[in-house]
Amino acid sequence: MPYPPGHREETRRRIVRSARNLFNRLGFDNVSINQIMAGADLTRGAFYNYFDSKSDLYAEVLGCFFTDPGWNNSWEGVHVDLAASDVGRQIVRAYLSRQHLESKGGACPMVALPSDVARSGASAKRAFENVFKAMVSTLEGGSNGNRIPRTKAQAIAALCVGGMVVARAMNDRRFANELCNASMTVAIRLGGWNDRTKLKPEKAQRHRREQPY
Image 1 (cartoon, helix red, strand yellow):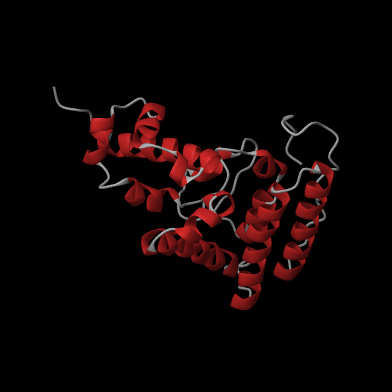
Image 2: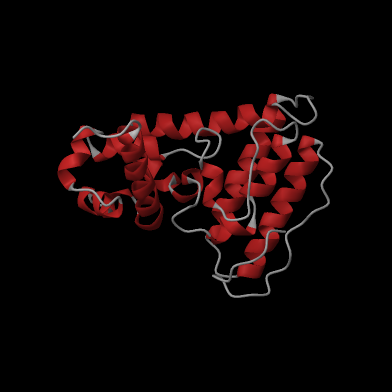
């Protein structure tokens, strides 16, 4: 019996979602193909119908909402409209959001996997580079049709990624929240976006679900 239309594409997406979640939580070296396929409710034998190797899959996992239209659904209550005139402001707020800070398997791989990428081969580094460049390019679009200089877009992207990497490494969640807030404030100022919204102080335990700010 033939598979329905779109079956292959959906199966590939399931494998990528499973791998992204596991790689983000455990790191590349600690995840097996068996684990990835089990997470996708598939058998190991099906893996090679879609990818040549775990490294091949790893390069595809290195994506975020700049390259994957469905990615913004990973953080509950956070949405980014890539067609909006203020997309740069939306990206800064989403990337430095409480939801992203507390996310585990759903974190942007640029935040969760930079050390793995640095130790990986050229294909993974190219994938990481492509996602970061896509972020910069999107931020360059600016707000209300006004573009911002590339140097500012690069600095904003670095503030978002670097700020979140450091914040997620902190035990002190209040300090981590303050760091995200500071990075957001400076990034929004650099982009020329008028946004007074700030992260609220940390009042709950690390895994408590917060309302979108």
